[in-house]
Amino acid sequence: MWQAAVAGLAAAGAITAAVLATGGGAGSAPAATSGAAPAADGLPHTAVDVSPSGCGHGWSKPHAGSQVFDLHNSAGSATEVYLTDPHSGKVYGEVEGLAPGITRPMRIDLGGGSYAFKCLQEDTDAVTGPTVVVPGKQPQGPAAVPVTQHDLIPPTLAYQKWVGDRISDLARGTAALKADIDRGDLKAARADWLSAHLVYERMGAAYGTFGDADGAINGTVGLDPDAVNDPDFTGFHRIEYGLWHGRPASALRGPAATLVSDVKALGASWADQRMDPADMGLRAHEIVENTEQFELTGRTDYGSGTNLATARANLDGSRELLRRLHALLAPRDPGLPALDATLDRTQAALEAEHHGSSWTPLDKLSRGSRERINADFGELLEQLAPVAAICDVRRTV
Image 1: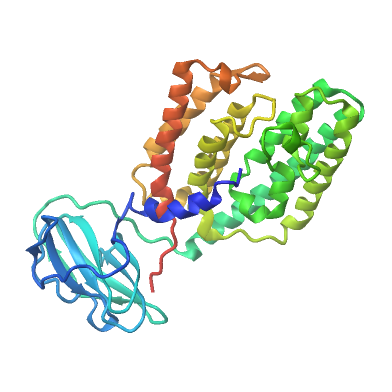
Image 2 (image 1 turned 90 degrees about the vertical axis):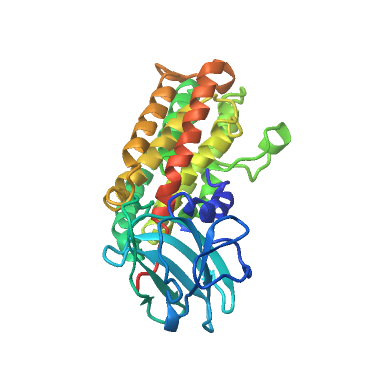
């Protein structure tokens, strides 16, 4: 489902903090000293200029441990600031959109090693400040080489082709569903409805590109008779309500024909669509977030009791994205093995509720199973946050 897209996008800034130390909120910070004096928060503060002409100036007494850089933009336009490893290009901390004349804090925990500030003012080339060596052998914190728009284009194109193939599968599945309904075989229709619906649910990262087609094919309304009888309510869930609420085949033929037509239109237009490469990492997180919000609460159950099947298909959708992004993530995210293990564990917990051709409805889950599945999805959200942060497109030049 795409309903939580706005919430997911709003969370993107917070997600970044899971991997990289980020600056505080907008506005002026208290004046900082030029050395490394303690402030009210108990941490040493260092005032650093991040204008292109003075990038990194002011950091003269480097030391390891938790500290705050009070970054001041003395230039005439907004600036992005990264604290980097000048040799590998890895980013340890960042502050975005630092307005002229504003000071903002970058709180960070530094280990021994070489560092340099990189200042990226609007409409100018990036400037890297002087290299500063922090003494000692204290381990360095999380860091990653920036991912650029160019890096994300190949996996995005590969994923878009994969979606096109799935749309063809979807067209075949919805045609079979319509044929069942046309001949009045509602038992077969219920089986083919689930099969086709799961094909659609595996394409979670593409819903934003589907545009209005998503609402037509998989939209929802309130769970009451007045809402489900709205003529503007179409797609899988309209048919689901009828199939599991005793509606005759004659009442479902029109919605089935509309669904087939909408899927056909989606397939015809897909070759002209372009997915945004910058969305790839965030979508893996959003799919799981939407699953937790809509499937594990039963909000999208119109009678079939198959929310756990949908949740299982959504896991496939996140896995497909991660498979496409793996070459970028493997050298950047040391948490990938743990993420894979959590995906496997969550999948196993869902599959334990799959019995032949049926799935346990949410209201029939044991307390232990519900708690285990909820906990697994919560852990997945935490472990997918670094994926979104790492794939957040950053300037490098």
